Length: 361
View (cartoon, rainbow, N blue to C red):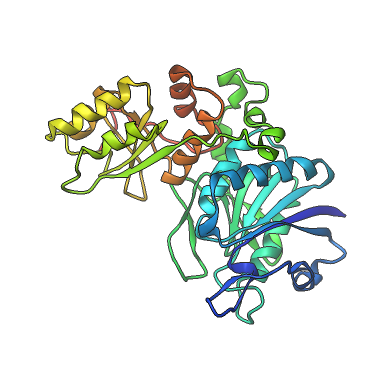
């Protein structure tokens, strides 16, 4: 019988009504167990709470708490399920993907759009599907399971605030689907896996995915979370904001640019301030506000100019994936060449396409 540990962190799936609106209830392990009783005899499921938060209240240090809990238990189970709120699940899934990029078991995040205590909840099926996925020995890595679909942890994007089919897999094949309690891995995912190279061959790292930030750092006061500024380009953007980034000691900047990675290069003050950041050794990465297809800094003048300044491309990474990746890397090294190398390396499926000026548009 496969053993699965379900870790609870709060979220809609365990929420109850209150005077202030829906909010995560106290430990609901018994209720959750009763909801999956139909899996008895096939899976040995244990529930353990970590913390109890609406996912809007999740902060980066929480990811390290989840990481240490997983590390403590993973050898004793065939797979891990994490119940999580939907609003920031894509961030948590991406960060855990880097933290456990060499894991040989499945770590699965799931949740629901309607609390599991409600009759019309999607939580029961999502939880059962997540348990089935976590226990499936064919999968290893971090995934999100939602509405029958299995998605790579670095590729999930929440497209709907209320629809039960809330997530898509962005710029990457769906890993699989679950129908009638059976897991089917897609051919597209199998083909994608064949193309991906073991990161150890590229980085020459023995345990890069697990060594950053020790258990003692999490337990004590020495855990240092890198400060990363998310900058969304809008018409009329004031470049003086970049002075604030320098003053406040941010260690990295991610720009959500236009289209293929554009910014207003006609604004000379913006270019000067951006160049000053880069000369200080602060990595600046160009992502895109578009959901699909990613960044190509070799196509338009507004992208070429950004690239010549030293702004790095996020390629086809989601904003959530590049934000957490930079945070994870800065927790490992402060060497700019290493930061650049890691950013441009596909660690766990977050980069599939690196556009060049030979690509058609």
